[in-house]
Image 1: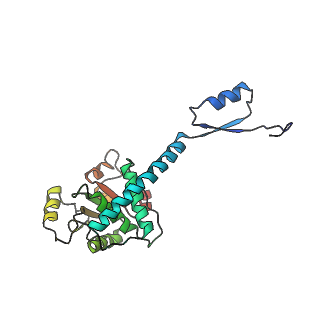
Image 2: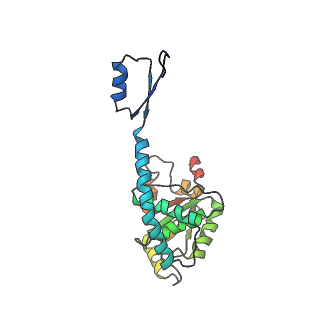
Image 3: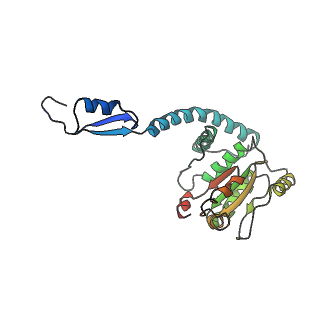
Amino acid sequence: CGAGVPVPEYAGFGVGAANTRTASMVARFGLAAWTLSYIPAEFWRAKAMLRACAAEQVRQRRRLDAVLQSRLPQLTPHPYQKEGVAFVLSLMALGERGSILADEMGLGKTLQALLVVAALSEDNPALKVLVVCPGFLRYNWQREIERWGVGSAAPQVMLKGKDRPASASASASASASSSSSSNGSGVFVLASYEWLTAVMRVKERGVGGECLRGYDLVIFDEAHFLKSL
């Protein structure tokens, strides 16, 4: 500030409220009228995560290229789709529990999700995947899974409230008897948000979420529907 110009308010930035250096300085100089603002520690964690994620994405892009070459040679994803898949895989590799693909409609988010499954199934051929989507999209997922041969068996489509996913042993048996054109990329269960609410009891305290533990990966299509759960 210029000489002789009163400054009634000042924004002092520190690393979280636990950092008392700025507050001590303000108290020392008797600047009681000054206002302090702090940069939360989460900000610095986010920057560190971005750096780690960028480095990890390089490795995950190579991993995806190897999967495409060895198991899905018929697929040629766009560069932005490969970037999206590498982003999701990098977060998983860094121990994060979730990620969001927010591309515009029609840009191939379904395919990106299937490529994530294909990459994960390299380490876990029996990968069990639950796809939750609006009811009318279940057949779209079934069509895409079968079109690209990503599933190790026919997807299990939950149509009615009485429908339940097959047991792990039944899924394994179905995988063993599936056609040779399959790439062995896991077992899919396709369900609507209504089915998830009614059957999985996600709204019940102490129960919600526990029902999802039997899956290695849960994909929420049109995830804004989660707001109504």
